[in-house]
Structures are given as structure tokens and as C-alpha cells.
Image 1 (tube, rainbow, N blue to C red):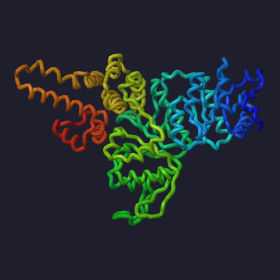
Image 2 (cartoon, one colour):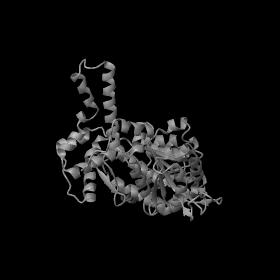
Image 3 (cartoon, rainbow, N blue to C red):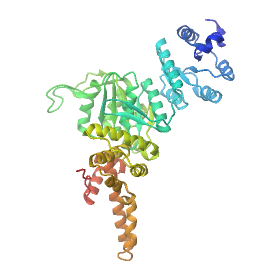
Image 4 (cartoon, rainbow, N blue to C red):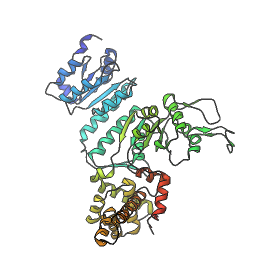
Length: 475
């Protein structure tokens, strides 16, 4: 190919009007020629092998439909992407990347790139990505349009806010990069749903998605659960058993509550992430698996690393990309949509007719703090569905039934006790109410509640006994 491809090469104007106009920057002339021969029959192409020539073209008034941008590991992508964004802020960009550097992928995603196609690729990979994004541009779906994406028979990804729409786009994009993913967020925010959505959007979607809750499995059993064991490896190992990583090969394993994983297993997991190998308990023979790892936690990872309870090298290996799910209180506009979804889901599950939400009840749902996030909201909607008593739900959600109620005894007992005793009583009431709310929000999952409250599991059990707390009756 001649060096003249440093300048745009396009189809005639009459043809260009009827076909999508795509700009391609690729310094490798052989790859550029391949893209021209593969895509030139369907799209109006402008080909560039030099950055400045591309930038000069972007300064023109007309707007192309798409930009294919090849990134190479020896060049910093930030200056070029920044210039493209400044010149054409709404131009969709698809990156062609052969870099295994995870930092490159994270950088371009943060700069608003629509998709990444990893090299080596075949023509259909690029064309399928182009078609998908041209189709989505035609639809011009509003960012806050409610959307419900079925994931399996019992779960859907539901969102209606711009913040969650951006999270959806990032998850879909990083799904194709097939890198480790870390999902952060409070308990009950939907980390498992986002992990499942990422799996369904990936090339592994036809294979298994397997969840392991690291906090729910006793530490002494977690290693055999994840990596399996040989016959006779320990007392009771009467036959060989494959672990979750073996079962999940080709698919995605979701390690929930990764912050609770014992240190000895963190080292073994690090090895799996580095080279895909591990050994069953009782075996010295290494096994190799092809598994994508998505991890999630609600703990402060930087604090855990500072306290040496979580390995720093494992954190950076897991953190190929991080998705942060905001708590429900920071996206209250989604509460009506989510409440309706949980009502439909609950009615199907319990074989009941759906109940409507009065303006008063919906306002109470919207104004509630939701310390247990989506899990708590679903529990409240299910109680409403089963009990059919709106008044009981309104009373449950009333601020006077929470920590604000602790202000009333002050007026009722002036001088009836010493100030210190009075304050101690108020603190106890407030603490009991706060703990009860978190427990209800986690469905009385004590380990999850202890993590949310940032106290030890034993301390939580003591508090439950101290305040005589018990699950709210649903009869």
C-alpha cells in the first residue's frame, strides 16, 4: 500500500450520502488496507495513518457517523482522545486495541469510548460492532428512559436514571474486554445483577455463570469449594470432587464478598488470575482453566489493604476495571420503577394479583432512606403484596418509626432523670432502631448487616441480644 493513505480516501459524494461515513485511524498500513478491503463495500470510508491528518479532517463542519481509532501500546491515547472529544464531542468512537495493558482499556472507557475490539480480529468482529452502534445511534434512546433487561427466569437489570445508564454502558463495554472486574457498592445495591449482566453481554454468555459467596462458606471449606479436592485429601474425602473453577471453565465465576476471603486463599486466587492454573487439595498436579473472574465487595478495599487483611497485589489484579454502584438513596428517581418491577416479580412468585401504589405510599417509598438498598425495597414491596395493608407499610416507613422518634422522650421527661442517663437511653433507642433497619434491609443476613454497620459479627450478635431484636413478623 502506498503512503498516500496518510490522507483521506473516500467514496464518491453520491455514494457517501447513502452509506454511513466512517473515519479510520490506523498507523499500520497493512491493517488499514485490510479494513479498507473488508469494510469499503458497505461504508463510506475515510482512511488515515497519521493523527494530524485525522484531526485536520475533524475540523471540517460535517459530522461523520463513526470513528475507528487504533491504539498502540507505545503511544499515550489520552492526548489524541482528548482532542477528538474537544473537536467532535458527540462523535461515537470505537477503539481497535492490541494492548494487554489494562490501564489503556480503563483510560479509554473513562473517556467515553463506545466499544473496544481487541486484536487480532476478523472483519466480522469490526463490522458487527459498527452495526450495533449505528443502530443504537438511530434509536437515540433517552438516558433516563426506564429499561428492564431480562437476565434469566428470576432476575432482570432494571434502571431509569442517567447514572445507572452510564453504568450499564460501562459494563457492556468492559464485558467484551474479558478482563477481571471489581464491583463495589453497599449491601443490597445489586452487585450480583450487574455481574450477571456483564456476563450476559460477554462472549462467555453461552457458558456458565457461577456465584460463590465468600462470606457464607466457612473459611476451612472455601478452598475445597473453589478448587476441589482429590480422594483421600482429608478425612471424609471419599471421592474426588471438582471445584467451582473447574466447573466454570469457559464461563464466569462471581466471587461475592471477596473482602472476606482468607489470606491463604487470596494467594491461590492470585495465581489463578495470573496464569489460570491451580491445584486441587491433595494434588500436586497443576490444572489450567479459562475462567473470567468478577469480584464484588461492600467493604472499603483501601482500608482493608492498609490493615493487611486483603492483599494489595490481588486487589490490583482483580481491579482490571471497577464499577461503583450508587446506593438507592442517591438515585431516588428510580424507586417508582423498581417498586413496580418488584411488585410484578413478587406477584408472579407468590401467585397473587399485583397491588397498585397510591401516591401517598409511593411518596413514602421515595422519601425513605433505604439503608438496605434494593434488597430492603424488595422486602417491603413483598410485605405489602402479602399483607395487602398499605397502612402497615406506611407506618413502617414513617420517620416517627425510625431514629427521629428518639426526640420525643426529651419533652416528656424533663428533669425525671440525670442528663447522662437520658442521653444513654436516647442513644440506645437510636442504635437499636438503626440496627433493626439494617437487619431488615439485609433480610436478616447477620454477616451482611455486620459488614454494613462496620462492626464485628460477634458485636452484632451481642447487640441483637441486648436490644431483644427479632425479624418483623410477616404473618
